[in-house]
Length: 175
Image 1 (cartoon, rainbow, N blue to C red):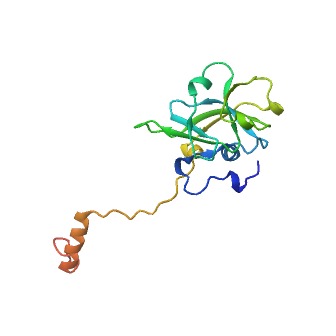
Image 2: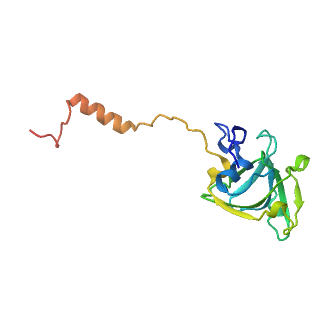
Image 3: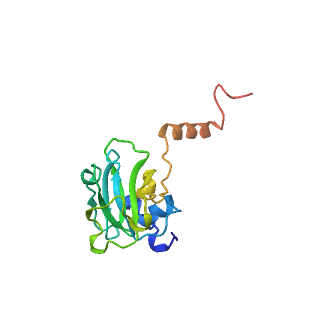
């Protein structure tokens, strides 16, 4: 899938999520370009999964209780929809699991809906893909922020005292 500016996460997105096209492109470069995906499973232990079909203006919770149960129910998302996971409080998440298959036709008005899919009758022989990726692959990289290094008041006082004493005073001084 060719990378293009409209599918790259914009600077400063942070937990604004990555678009589906970017997640697929970065983690499955062998897959053919697709119009979207059907998400079959999301790692519910990782946190609250959310998706946006309006470029991050509004977010809706993904119903993992619907898509993670036995059967063939999935969340239909077009390639420009965004996905993110908000980890549960106090829960350290290093990787998340996503299972999906690609579709060759846009979901149109159905993007963001839950729909049944036939496991054996997929577009162009599309198969289920299981990704285990870090949070940054889904949520996007937060922007780099320059924060001044905090100074330890005790260390500042000691260095001021050393300057006042003329360098290395005290027991470590060499005569």
